[in-house]
Each structure stands twice: as C-alpha cells, then as structure tokens.
Length: 247
Ligand code: NDP
View 1 (cartoon, rainbow, N blue to C red):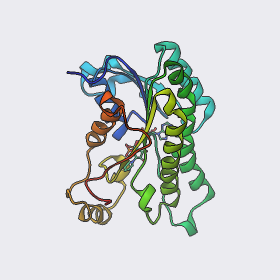
View 2: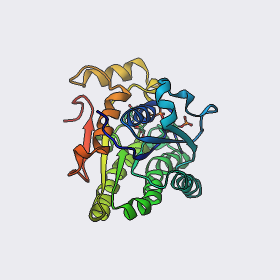
View 3: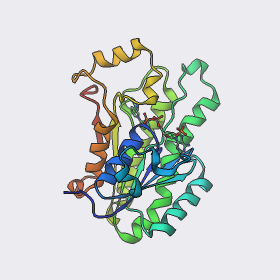
View 4: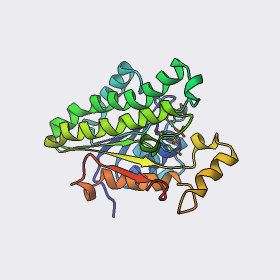
C-alpha cells in the first residue's frame, strides 16, 4: 500500500544524492514531486532510473539562496498543482576550511544556501500550507550541527541554525497543523562525501557502531515517515539518522 494519497512535494537539491533518493521515494509512495535544483537536468525527469516514476517527477530550476528565484519557482508550482503539502529543505553545500583561513565568501556561500535557503523556501510555502491548514516541512541538517567539525565552522553553524529555525517554525506553525522536523544524517555516501580522502572516510567508519555509511535511501525512508500520517504528532524534533555515530 502507498503511504500518500496524491500530495504535492518539493525537494530542494532533488536532482542528486539524498535529494534524488527522497524524490524517488516520495514518487513511489504516491506523491507528485518537484525536484527543485540549481541546475535543472536537460532531459527533465529522465535522470530518474525507474521509468515508471518519471511521470510523477517534475524538475524546476531555482537557486534557493535567492528570494526572487525561490518565489518564482514556488509560484509556478502553486499555479500548476494548486497546492504544496510537503517541503524538504535538502539543498546544501560545503566550502570547508580552517577558521583562520576561511574567507568571508566561503562563510556566506554556505550560510546563504543551507540556512537562508531553507528559510526562504519555508517562507514561500507557508501561506499555501496555512490556507490548507496542513503541511510538512522537513529540514535536512547534519550531526555536525550539534557536535561541530574542525574545518566546517560555516557548515556546522548553518546546520545548528537549522535546528533553531526548525523549532521556532514548529512553534509558529503548529496551530495551523504544519509540522516541522529536522533529520540529522551522519555520514552518507554521496558526491558530497566522495570528496573525503580514505583516511577521513575510515575515521568516520571507525566511530559508527553500524560500521557502514548511510545510503541516500536510509535518509529518504525517514523523510517519508516524517512526511506521512505516521508522524502526525511529531513536530520540532531532531531525528539523528547516523548509524549511532552521535550518542
Ligand atoms: P549533493 O552535493 O550530492 O547534492 C546537493 C544538491 O543540492 C545538488 O543537486 C546541488 O545542485 C543542490 N544545490 C546546491 N546549491 C543549491 C542552490 N543554491 N539551489 C538549489 N539547489 C542547490 O549533497 P548530498 O545529497 O550529500 O546532501 C544533501 C543534504 O544532506 C545537504 O543539505 C547536506 O548538507 C546534507 N547532509 C549530507 C551528508 C552526507 O554525508 N552526504 C551528511 C549530513 C548532511 P548542483 O548539483 O547544481 O550543485
């Protein structure tokens, strides 16, 4: 049985990695999903391997760090589908460096995409959700938002900021039945972590009780739970999906 009955979902950064896995999962569970990405694929939803899911996936270009770009994309989606039920703020970048060498540009790029981007997208969808008195916002944070990471002051600050934002929005939107939660993944095997060298990867694995990195599907399954009726009494929560790395 499918989990959803025809909702409209948006996944930012939905054309790759964890975002793509969530797009596929939501589509397989009965949602129409807009993959909102910085660069939209040339051949639309053809990047989705399972051909049967492609009609349920639409690609829309937007830079989440720009209010103008976000508002234009959300307007297109509302005009097309008449509703937005689920937003996943997943788009994220890293620009690593030690604080003493980190440039203002590295700091701003990460905060603007990861934190401001999530704020702008949430702001843009909250009106249509409020008028329906129903909605789900799922933020993709990181365990480094609570434990920190040398070389990632900008990234961990953005992810820590998302926790505060999640809880504030949960309090603001709760009376309208809009639930806001955050998933904090640990080490997930995507292009983002491909950039780590073998020593860095092994250091992670050594500290993960489950002795493996997460697949994007491990995260997508929890996102589907948070988007479904199964989690209808949960809001303002941080769910760590990290194989036990942080405990
Ligand atoms: P990827 O780098 O594989 O994918 C990120 C996606 O976001 C890309 O499609 C990228 O587009 C898109 N994106 C980047 N900037 C923007 C923007 N300004 N506007 C719209 N889209 C944008 O990352 P992951 O799948 O690994 O990560 C997804 C999320 O999970 C991120 O928030 C990340 O911080 C978080 N996370 C990841 C972990 C991991 O181990 N991988 C661990 C913990 C958290 P483009 O390809 O065009 O750049």
